[in-house]
Image (cartoon, rainbow, N blue to C red):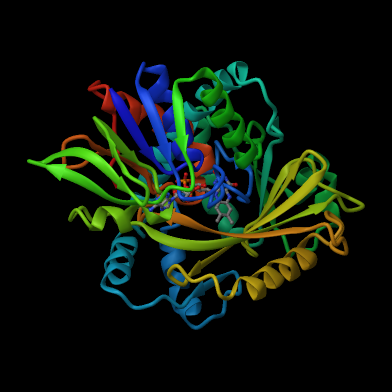
Length: 410
Ligand SMILES: Cc1cc2nc3c(=O)[nH]c(=O)nc-3n(C[C@H](O)[C@H](O)[C@H](O)COP(=O)(O)OP(=O)(O)OC[C@H]3O[C@@H](n4cnc5c(N)ncnc54)[C@H](O)[C@@H]3O)c2cc1C
């Protein structure tokens, strides 16, 4: 079969890998000049296998009035008021119960564990490097009540084979001495010793080169998908700004833009673009080695080889990027007040970035078939696309192949 993957982010490229493994001829289309140039470019780099907790929770709902009033500097809620946003918000609110938050987190954990196994195998096959390391992850929490809630989730995670434990601040400093120089207040941490780190853009480029060299996958870059041509309820071709590409099947992996295309066909996906930012800097005097999250300030600190990446924030502002400069300054200020010695903030050699997370209300990716024969979905990975990419790619490739799979639709 000729399968066309729409989108060359980390999700689209891993999808292409599993499709070629199943023996298909694959074309990957992206409007950018290079692969992984959108949300997969400057993300937090964390393969967060034990920490894929859903954003929608009872605690988050309680904070909503404060968020709307602008009290949390890390989250900006100024969306264009569209019917899609209102529908999405309602969906998000209904996911904010304790029971649903746990179910959503556990579903993501299951995917994360499968992803970890698959990436381990893929690394053996892939010739190039992408800054991969088992770094361990520490999530610093500032309130005793947050620690108590985390203790319960950590027990569940450990039972599922994703080791996580709540530890004291002193213990966190022993594991990661850089934390001793961070400025809280912190009450303790959740520690996931087996979590990993890696540059998702470098991985995507390596994998794309590998697939191209093998001759099993063709990349059509600088090519915008305008529409999908359907006849009698079945896909016929992909319409691009250049030409029509005949396809037996397509997998839509357009990240935050997936719903824009599918709306044209009457398929409505609950995906909202949530803007986040990162800055990549040289190491400071006391750089961290483990991945560290300051939960209160909503920022993550990862070390990729000899650089520190600080990423975070969640802005609900539609597809606007006009405030990026100010928000990146806010992120840098938050990082300086949290971890002043971890990175060289004075360096001119810094790279700032913003990207749109494709977030579903329940925080789970959408993997499945659509009502139109031949059109499949692998999208909506929200805050964890790098972590979950391999597992959902395997699932969607099995679906295209016609194999039964535990597909998850949001
Ligand atoms: C600040 C921040 C930190 C993050 N940290 C982490 C982390 O530490 N760990 C983790 O697991 N995840 C993290 N994420 C989430 C992760 O980056 C995303 O979930 C993931 O990159 C989504 O990948 P994707 O391939 O679905 O989307 P994208 O990478 O956005 O790819 C979609 C592609 O579709 C293309 N496209 C769109 N429309 C068209 C069209 N009409 N025609 C052709 N091409 C089109 C785009 O050019 C793009 O290349 C973070 C995100 C942010 C914003």
